Structures are given as structure tokens and as C-alpha cells.
Length: 477
Image (cartoon, rainbow, N blue to C red; front, side):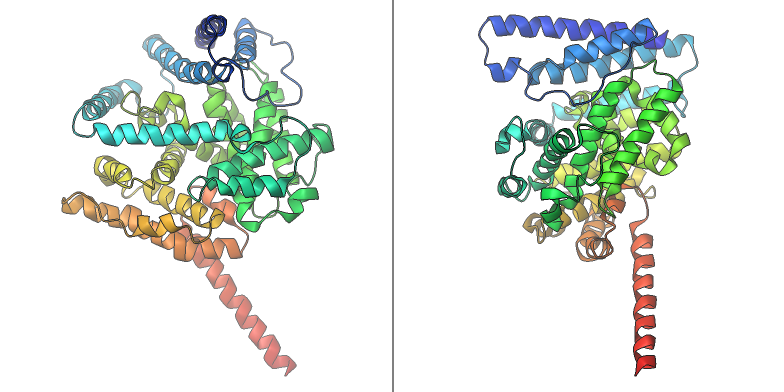
């Protein structure tokens, strides 16, 4: 019943927004605002859903494909808010979802949200306004990347030429502009070279991709995952049978494995969480449950992508209205997923706002003590900084960020900044990225794990290998 009510509400919202868009179109608003900029992903759609909830979900998705940017953003945010409201009502009459006590945690969540709202209209208004501006800038850059760098709307294109254009936007923007390029290139290649086959091989290895610069590989593979997830999620609805969900998820994992270079498949796998949480919100619980059974490692990457989506989702772009940290607590099915979500939120919070480090300082002031021993913020900083250094070697902004001195005079805030931001950012630049890049394991920054322990093992392996090499050389002498 919960799914049916949510589907009815989502369908009503989509139809209302589409009607408003048609009125706006009739009034002569620019086509850039009232026409869809990007076509839906290629490939088959869901078969006839067996229930009313599934049919409504399918029709809602078809309507959303016609949205221009304003309607699309309003729908993503409104759909989540409606779903949360439905959850509140149903949690009164049935067992609450989630792994934490829903009602005992709700007062604290409300108090936290009220505090954020108060700060947004008070002394920290400039901080939250700047953060919303930064997040919107990146969201639009990724969503409209083909238009931004001028990729043709159809047919094959010169990857090397548009790679230069993607990097030409700027050092700061290159992470997202290259991800967007990877999305379009993967989708176009999948269509033109493989006829959208589930048995496609070599998209990131063959043809033009064979000559991609090494620095582009992490986010080009993230774009590959976006393209595959976008298309395959079209085949599912909220009432899809377990066997069908299993099949689609296995196809996604297979396509990521068969079309990724060694050491980069995790970059592609993570995108499933981003696409599902941001653009297919009602599907998150169904997908994660089945994914946990068929591939626990892919499940971890999924939640990491879902954490990234929580930050970028329009429903959380204005955090004083709805904090992604509160949403993570409400949505995580268990403690492990909760930690991964928080690390995932920390990743974009750090990198998106790197030009304005006082924004992350505000997060440290509010949440640093609570997360200090969880390792979530520290990991998000390390992973995103390593990514920045990998995709834009010698990134000048990273060193400026490492050198930043907190504005706060509070010794506790300064201590937490040193431990949770300065140290992991420094290690990312000087230790994590060089070693992971050397071993072709950059996709490991897309998982929530102890990066120090990982690079320790790799360094130990190097030491043993070098020692064996020396012994062999002496034996030959």
C-alpha cells in the first residue's frame, strides 16, 4: 500500500509539472527551459508492470523524460519530499523502515534541521548560499555537459578533441566535465558499435578509447557506469519480480566488468547508486536488497554512489531545507550502509566546495566530533582529493586547500580540521594517489575503506617484489 500511495503522488506531481511546462511553453518561454535537453538512455523499457503501482511508476518516468531543467529539478526534489511525507504517515500505522528507531530519532533530526534553517537565515547565511551555488553549478555542468562542450547530438565524434574541450573548462571542473564526456562517449559507442548489446565488450579499451590520457580514466569509467545504469534502470519498476531485478543487476555488473580497464571497474559500479538514488528514488530499497545477495562488493559501491547522490540531489541542494545527513540516517538499511553513505556525502562536500574551504570548515564544526572516530569524513576528504590529483595532476587548488588555516579560533575545530581534513588531504596527494595510481587501483577510492591499510599492503608488496628482484639479479650474477 505504501508503494501505491507513493506512486499515485509521484504520478500526480509529474503530470502537474508537465502541464505547467506546457503552459510555460505556450507563453513563449525559451526552449532551453521547457524542452528536454538529453534523450533517455537507449535500450528496452520495462515490460507491462503487473500492478497499478508499477504502471503509475512507469508512466511517471515516461512523463519525466519530457521535462526541461526547471521541471526536472522540481520533480526530483518534490518526489523525494512527497515520499518522505508518505513514509511519516505509514510509519504511524506500520513498522517503520530503516535500521534505527524511527520515532526516537525523529525529534533529534527535526532539531538538527531547525538549527540548520536558523543558521541559514542568521550568521551562516553566506556559507549556505555559497554552498548551494557551488552544488548547483556542478549539477548543471554534469547534466548539460554535452551542450557545454558542444558534443554533437548524434553520431560518432572525435574523443580526443572533446577530451581537450572537457579539460579546457578548468582544472576545478575537469572531474565532472570528463565524467559527462565518459557518459556520452560510452552511450554513443554502445549504440553505434554494439547495438546496445548486453554482451558489449571493450568500450573503455578499444577504438578511440585506447588512446585516452591516463589521467581521464577514473571519471571516464564513472561516465561508463552512468550510461549503463541509466539505460538498465529503465527496465525496472517498483513491482518488478525479484528474478527480473537480479537479471538487470547482473547485466549491469557484467557490462561494467566487460567494458572497463583493470583497476577501474569500481568507478563504473559506483554510478548505479548515483543513478538509482538521484533519478529512481523509489527503487533504492528494492535494488540494494537484491544487490546485497548477488554481489556484496557491488553493494558497497552502490551505497557509495548513493551517498554522492544525496549531496547532489535537488532535494538536498538547499541543505537548510533538508540535510542529506538526516536523509542518510533515515534511508540506510544497516550500520555499514550508513557509514558508506556518510563517506559518500563527504566526498562531494569536500571537492565541490574546495575553492571555498570555510564551507567544509562549517561541516567540521557541526559534525566533526560525531564523525571523528567513524572515519567517514576523513575518508571522503582523502578519496575526493586523491581523485582530484589523479584526474588533474599537480592540481594547484589542492595545495591551496592543504595550506588552508581555519577561520575559527576554537581549538577543537582547529584540531578536528587538522585530523579530518588537512591530514587526509595531504596523504591523498603524497601517498594514496601515487601508490593507487601506480598499482592501477584508483577505483578503490570509490569504496569506504581504510586507505592507509590498503596502501600499506601495496607498499609491502612492492618491498617483497623488489627484494625478490634483487635476489634474482644476484643469483644471475
